[in-house]
Image (cartoon, rainbow, N blue to C red; front, side, top):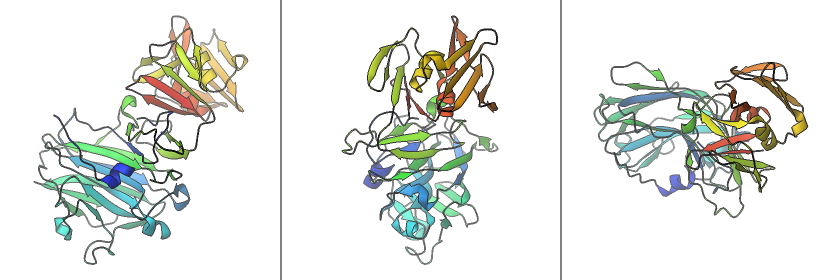
Length: 383
């Protein structure tokens, strides 16, 4: 099914995964989102719980907004509506978020007297409408569900439902997909949004109960709007916590990395701080996880060879750096960080006598960022 998306310029300037804030230059316009689930149609609803960032976690909010957290549904013919929490200058001055929606067609907000393709649900715009505002730091559950032909209902904690017109929507859900779960960055080149916490993402089909949804590792944090035209050459990093999105997303703007490395699947050459080097073994993918040989993963995280220890008897690798000691054992789904056991959903491997470690868990335990570019089959590690 071929889809054509027309995004208003405001959202194009702003508007992810669980993928990838890559180790590259981005425009200040940036979005983090899940991938469209085009291969598994039939959804009639989705729900998610979110903890909203506080004022100190956001910089660069402008009159038209900058920080957004959306969920959305799309019909088989490509009509889609996205609705969620928004913060513009007015909201920022009052320490609040307001409900904001956008659609790719006119008439979504007919019930509220608007024919625009966007709508802010604050009383200041429509005195007889709802006043959907929430304090910074609120923990809210949002849901978007097809409730009648050509209609969806949006609900958010403690408020009356919002009715939206969505042409082609059907309660039986044939051909419908959930569009995205999205967090939008500031449109200020020096702006940022962090501590957006997403939890308990669930989706449903007609006649079925709500089911937990968790994308595969290669779907996580997929992004668009990559642009090397930003004159300030800002870098954006996305932290996803110990589990894949939607457990925890933290969006942070960085001016430039202090160190960076990249490894490409199928290649022995890798790059550390702009210097090309050659390894004797390259990265591999196992169970949708990227693995690196222990020694070269250590190099990428600033660890010297004498700080990497392999115990052949216990089949465990120990890495020491930056005041932390990390130990992993072949075949065991845990990470020992300074004698504290942390469960992980990937196990270290032994391939042809060489130990491979899951790159993300080790690097993040050492305070590094890790992102995967599925198109280029490349893993980036930086701090």
